[in-house]
Length: 141
Image 1 (spheres, rainbow, N blue to C red):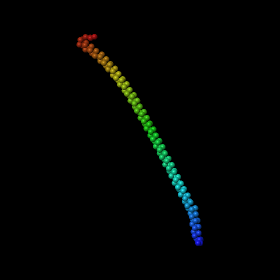
Image 2: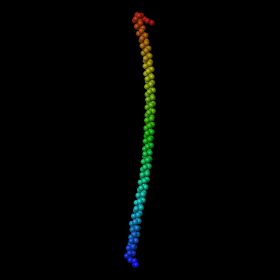
Image 3: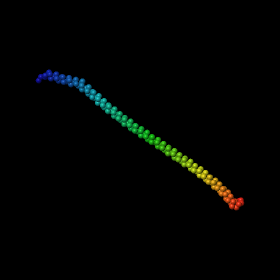
Image 4: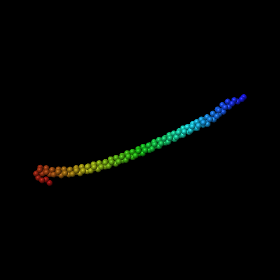
């Protein structure tokens, strides 16, 4: 069996072609595919970090909003409580002033009534003397 030289040339050509394809096509293509895989993995990791950071920022925002809302409600409650205390104070002061005015008016009325009674008693006494003197035509004592 004799080896045909053309078979050797075909085998040698296939080996050279395989080495050339491996060196010039498959290695660069594999490198590009690995680089893309690394870029995708890096982008996914970056997206996961960004999502976690966004969740953390949202939670922080909600916590601060809740704290601000609670603080506002406390301030509103304090203002309402102060307003109620001021109202109570004003009502008590007004009641005291009204009571003082009523007492003063009652005292004036009592004093005025006593003075009117005294005047009426004096006038009644004088009128009684005048009636008696007319009836008797003389001075009564």
